[in-house]
Amino acid sequence: MSTDYFDLEFHTDDPKLTKLCSEYWKITEDGKFARTGTDIAKEFGISSAGLGKLVECYCTAYSKEIFCNNCGRPYFYDNRSDYQSTQRYQSKTWICRECQEIERQKQELEQRSKEDAQRKTLREEFDLKFRQPIKLNSLSLENAVYLLSLVRSCGSEDFSYAKPTVMIKEPFAPSKDFEINALKNLFRERYISVHPESDLGAFIFDTPIRFYVDRVMWALPIDENGSPKNVIAALEEKFRDMDWNKQWEDEQLELWMKIAHEECIQYLDVCMKDHGFTFSPGDKTHLVIDSLLREYSVGQVYSFIWRASKDAAAFYVREKVNKQHAANTVVGNLQRQGERAKAEGWEVKPYRRDRRCPESVISQVFFNTALQIGEAGFTQKPYQAI
Ligand SMILES: [Zn+2]
Picture 1 (cartoon, rainbow, N blue to C red):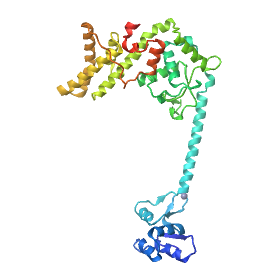
Picture 2: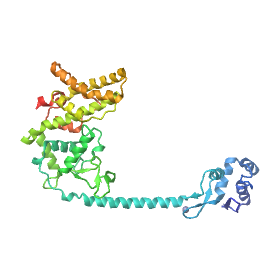
Picture 3: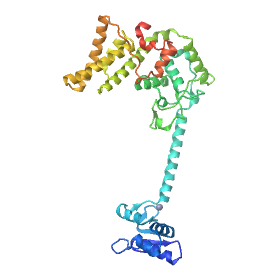
């Protein structure tokens, strides 16, 4: 049966049911339904809900206006309100469910073959076969600390890989830049290799392939037998026995300063944000922090930082100056506090670590495992300790 708006297909020979369905879908010349559902239901002695169910079961109404853009199959209406809403909202272009499913499968297949090709490229590009055994004696103190930090925080049970640093909860280094540079260092010196089974999202498939150092998985260094286990055991032992060479002795102050410096910058950032300041440390800030660390421990510099940012906030409120101007007073304030404390021989009480700046893995490995001084790394000044 056909009307101006749809073709009706019946799934029954029963004349009463056929009539019921026809009445349901009957449309007047002005495009409105001829009778209300209640009226039809009443005539056939059933409920309105029962009417809907019978029509759905015994009749399909195919649109004469809307067709699948892909296969040409006509749209079919679930019920009257579906018809009404398509009249109001649906554009005449439509893709049927079957065609959508075929398209989805096609895209999935394309995606999978693209990923297979990318994986193949990675396996060629970062083939672990070509790794050279590591020589532990040539490792600098800095790289030894970074490597052990990576092994301890990210290494798998069998040391066959280290997961991406971005996946661990505790901070790997005192700052993100520090983390990236530490990993780059290890990679550049070939102590670690990019693992070809890393998540594909860690790479940018340009020529040459680029990758995010904090998102790739790493292959750990191997000995002559191709095993990472012995290398790591030897590295742990070297630290445990404090088997240091002259080069390591010479390097330690520099590494201490580097870690201490970043820890101060990190705390400065937290304090400034506490007072609603945005502040990006420039050369002057870095110089002032370094000179403070020649006289004071990180814990003591924390107390200067806390005071300086509090003063800047008070200055901002009191003098109604520009916020950036107030933030910029912090560096001068830090310098003055340091110089005054020294000149007047003040005893500067060290702060504790702030829970918002938890100790990083690198800091723990350096102070607890390498220097074996624990919290003193925070409460002692680098220059006095070494
Ligand atoms: Zn279709």
